[in-house]
Image 1 (cartoon, rainbow, N blue to C red):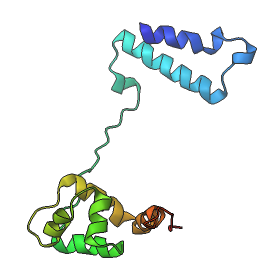
Image 2: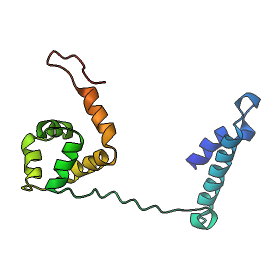
Image 3: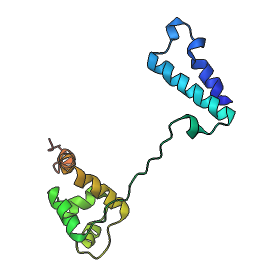
Image 4: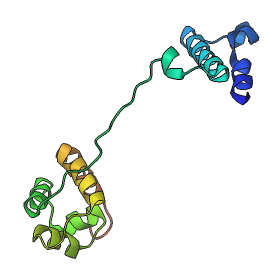
Length: 139
């Protein structure tokens, strides 16, 4: 098996003294070798190793017209600035704030990030500010 050949190259028994792995590295190689042995033997992996299934809730929060206004005000941003920051048109932000159009999922995901830590995003906006002459005015 291809992976077995790769592990043989880094197995502690095949290395000279200068190439020896750290104790953690050796433990990792041993664990991977045991995993390969189990796969090659056709053993059910979950009977020999700890197998965890993780469920992630990645569904963004839906944003109402009032929610959009709150996020924008938390950033001290105009509709135009929020639109530019999100990569959408001013008309899109305006229609969200008026409840005319729903906020797209990708924008909701970004708004979740902004809502979770508005200070980080306010700082990012300040850093991006420049004068009409192109001079940075953010700190």
